[in-house]
Image (tube, rainbow, N blue to C red; front, side, top):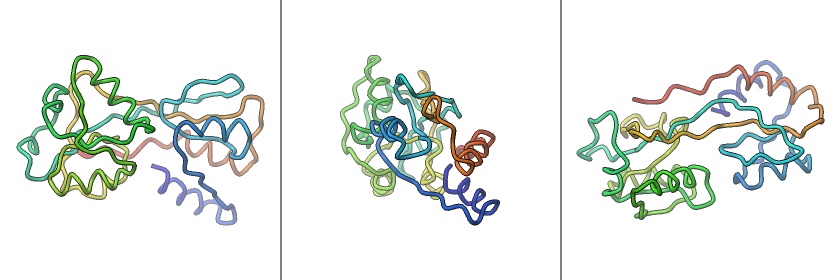
Length: 193
């Protein structure tokens, strides 16, 4: 969701430079706390003293299946059914993986066939027919390749909270505040069906 939002911000404020520091979830709070960034955006961040979390939206995980897979025409799939498939999961440091592992701990077994760092790698493996990936509905990669079906995961729904992290008591610079305001009123893009 960020690239189109940044483009809109740059149209409104062409002289403001936007710097993105892409990082794993464990480092987001640290960067906000030490003020190496104005604010952070992350999923399922642990609350910390001295930081304020502002909920933005919820993201739902989807099962991304190969175009030739028998499930390709379904609208949703159960965790139990997924447990019997070769799964392509994000690596252990990602919020997507932690959410997936928690869900499968509810009585299902998830032994991944592949563990990847990048969503684009997961989609490449799905395209090659090597398994089913579990990815967030807001992943731009899903919208870029509508030929790959993504299915809603039946109960329990796998959702993660996307939050804005601010340093408590710190005022944002005007440019960062303008971006934060735009972010707060922009809903995430629609999920492919």
